[in-house]
Length: 270
Image (cartoon, rainbow, N blue to C red; front, side, top):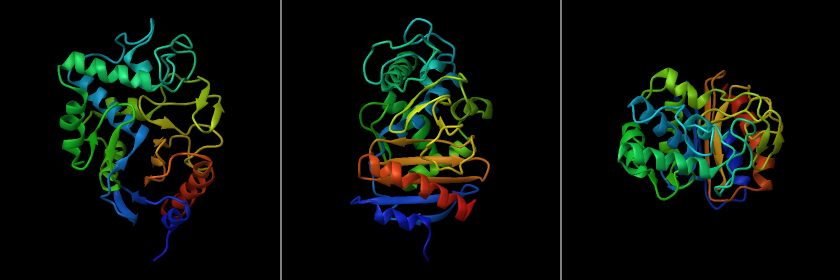
């Protein structure tokens, strides 16, 4: 039986795999769901969940200072701390621009380790990956971009994002709802957006155009994509989620292919 995910075979990647969930149940699969690949910045969704878990455990607070003067844990989760993408340069005062920053997430990981006494990779494994059953996933480097995982595991993450079990709903909402509204910024690969909405972990569709989650995605759609040619989004209105992994690095092909695929998934299963 054919479906929207069959389009993955036309993407020019040596490996593609994907899954669609409706109401937290997998309703479509494509490719090998257990093959492990680097998921790049989708890693940030797991790191944000771990940081929020640490706040619930009392290790530190969301509004504790971290990063440049005036920046907090919450700022860094939402790419509002003013830090450069991959250096410690401060490009703007905290809370004034949306500047996507791996550095900010690496600071969050170091802060988590300092305050808990547990290495960030171990904390992610014991606090998030293990409890969710993501047995094939592992952090192999930066907590901003170096998690390896597979479609099977990421469907479990999508279910957790949709209906949290590890966090209180009010805490989980930080990761999936708008933080610091009204900030303009650049969505990597998709250009300047004003506003460039972001939650405390997930990126929000908001009013961005163009957008990788498609033209029909409601503003509350959230998720993340990775530079390794990967993405995960959750549409809470249609109660549909989609996970796609490839081994082809992000580029113009993804800008052309991802929005129509996402729209087709929503049309077929929403």
